[in-house]
Length: 442
Image 1 (cartoon, helix red, strand yellow):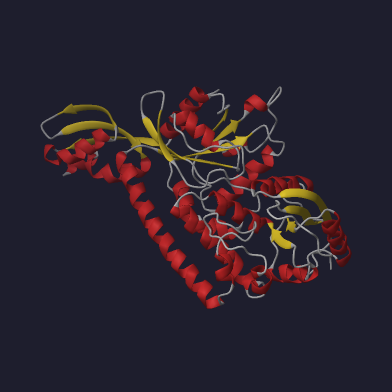
Image 2 (cartoon, rainbow, N blue to C red):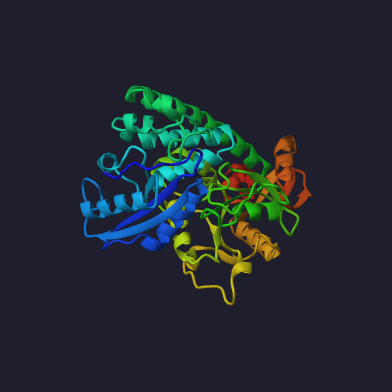
């Protein structure tokens, strides 16, 4: 067991990072690149990285994931570097966590990538909805781990709340008092949070229904964290959505009106950034937010083309879209940050999955007009034509079509307004009873 070290009061946490992978299975990123991403996550959480190591294994050790020799080596590094946090790049099972903690001194905290991401979310949730979603994800992550960790964690916790209160990284959220309660109480809390979030989902459904009635196409921005989505929505809508050069700088969805070149408008929604190995508890907890993506007419997938792992990041986002059953929605690939690329843009593949690919610099407002035109083309491709006759006594229907800007041409006749419509296929169903053939047969 490593010896106890002196850590000055108010000092930043110092972490040692460890990546472990099976020899025959590499993830989207190489083990070294994945550790570099983990380092960015640690820095985003306010942790200084003192060192890192990796190991390829034929099979994971059922008790500690890594071999006993490697664990001894890590313990020596923790003492040598005066590090007080050990962070694994993959999610540890409750058994792995329990057995590794037995080998650590009381002043060393053990985290994995999932706990680190959850902590970052806890720091950045700015609305009550975001805080609810993070708190639920934290409880569901911790429930199978708490039973044997209460004593260990209670010695370290400094209290705090899921809204970014005090306490070390990985300990924000439920806080010390919840660490002392039993499983039943935690399960009760999870049930209550799920009920609260169901109300949020119902509220969002009402908002989406109102937006649908406006007739404006819905477009969702998705992308790997720090790809520049908030900067893009600010540039397109002349808005002031919070944007920073940090991972997960924005969690809470934002919707803005954006005018297209022909004068029509769309509603553009920002979403939480994706990342590889995103905790499943987080995807489940953010279901209410991610449902925004499922009901859009078009997805703008924003990618940082200047990043060395741009292709892998695009693939990680595609995997997440498939996981939330959004892969069928038409999407446009937006290669952002071209101002940071010297020479020709790198080959990335995946192009066939998109209706179109556009290269832009959101920060310098470069390529925005062609992008807006591409959005318009993509939306138009999803619209259908419909000729209808609206009886004069159905003036409310006529006004609705006019407000939604679905009318391309019109004339009056003895039977009513004869209209040529151009509208989303999903909305066409509601007006088919007024279609020319249907109206004449009545």
